[in-house]
Length: 84
Image 1 (cartoon, rainbow, N blue to C red):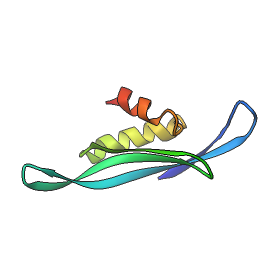
Image 2: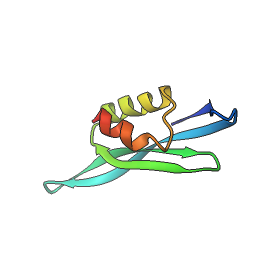
Image 3: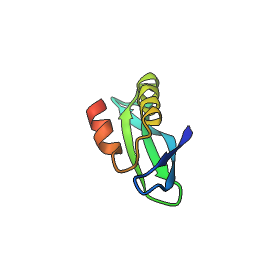
Image 4: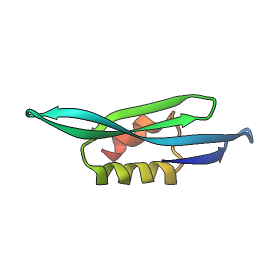
């Protein structure tokens, strides 16, 4: 979706890539897409939270929030929990 750069407390520049995850979920005999998010630091750690919602509009809101605030892999799960 996008990338962001952030300078850490040691003055190093870190780059984070934000991804939309698309999966498939069975609901009452029907199959539908579900969405999640992933953040990957270039050359470093990453984190993902799959199966957050089946709403494309809601996942768009979340990923916009993550990118705007340069959320890192370390804090992704907490931010998603608070958002839900």
